[in-house]
Image 1 (cartoon, rainbow, N blue to C red):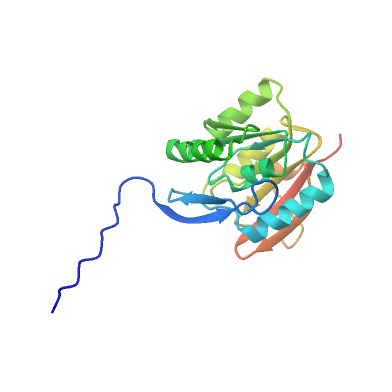
Image 2: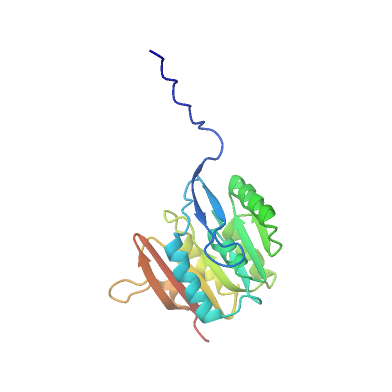
Length: 210
């Protein structure tokens, strides 16, 4: 009786592709984006992205003049989705060197000339961009849930978002509780859209006038 070959061992070193997501609209529709196994990396689900980009299409209209900042890029699902739909420029930021290399590989594969990938600490870069007078029409904030990044990142967006610009914020909890109470760091922002899918709470925010 022939012996069964032992199962091939999966190497534990180096990045592993746990799964993949797909771009859902635009020029690169259905293009797969590999998702690396990295601490805190949790790509925005397809269903959520579809809803969010429907919101953005309704509120922003044409993407041709839209400048996008994706501060916690991760898999690149949000940033590449915006670029696929024709955003003028998408700046994608992540602090993880392996993730940044993966984003650069995808950028080259797609010949995404409207995408800039930077390795940097998101909060430090946000401060630097604001000091240099950089402004963005859409900012994506999808940080790791276990860290208190959102409460620190959103106030920085006060000086980064254009007048009438929008910020997408994803979190493990609703930003406004059942009693309508909101944290202090949300006081300058109006929640114009919000929804929930499973454990994902997602919001579209706009800076309050004045």
